[in-house]
Image (cartoon, rainbow, N blue to C red):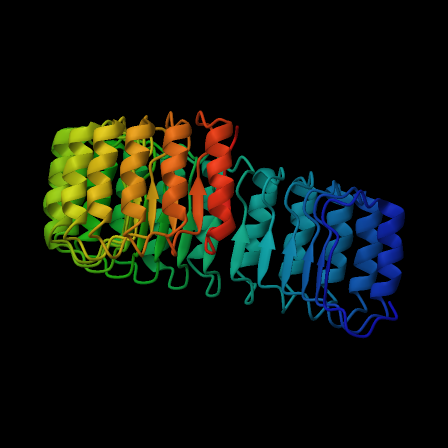
Length: 489
């Protein structure tokens, strides 16, 4: 490479094969400026990986190399490993989706024992197996530079989780561990819990999409009572249930470091939600709580509403797909009238109806912190949309309103249009799939002629015809703020 200035080269998805990779490799041997090379989604294979590895032995500038989705296999991983033993500049290496098995993982592990620069290693979506996980665990006991290790999508089970847990007890540098999309059960969850009791560096643990039940959830809860570093725990797509939620709720009453807790799709019902609500009344660090796709029910929603009246740290709450009806929406709305910290509320895929929407609207007239409100797929109808419109005429803080799939029709769109003529803060309005026809589009078009803040308007999958399209076109000639308009005719 004769070029003396290029620092970043992105060749993602370019059908680069082994021969082209060899050519790049030769250039890398002499290049003195390139710091980032992205070859994700090509077909360099093991031969291409071997060529690049030879270049890494002498190259002294490259710090980030992305070889994801290139089918380098074990042989390619072997070559990369040899380079890592010598290279002294590479800090980030992405090898996701490369058909790397236990043998390839073991040789990479050996390299990690001596490498002194690599900080991020992504092995997502390979087949590292039990032996590979064991090898990485041994490396983590020695390695002193790696801070991010991504092993999701590798069918890691309890045995592998237990081996990695042993490493976490002594490792003093790793801050992020991703074990998502694997097969870790309660035993693995319990082992990780034991590790968290002594580990003092891990800040993010991703366990989404495993098979951790209530016992594993309770074990992790016990760990959080003493752990003082973990800030993000992702348990989405497990089965911790009410008992696991209870265990973690007890931890939240004591823990003072966790800021993000993701319980999406965990079979949590009323009892679990009530336990978490009690914890929120005293917890002073949690900022994000995801309870989407559970079954918290009426009592759970009521309990959370009471918690929001006193909690002073939570900024994001996701309650999507929880069978929340208008009564629960009314309770949450009452909380919003006094809560002074929540900025993002997701209530999509519930059944709040127009009565729930009216209650939320009343809250929006006085709430001074909520900036994002997601009400998609809630059957709010024209009346609910009109109530929200009245709130938007007064509210001075909400910037994003998602009403996707609510059948607001032309009347609802008319109401929102009147609000847009007055409102000076809303930047994103999503009205996808709302049975809006020409009349609704024409009304919105009139609003766009004077509104000076809206930047994104989604009108896709409605029933807008030629007249509506014509009106929108006319409005865009004078509107100077809309940058994204979604319309599917």
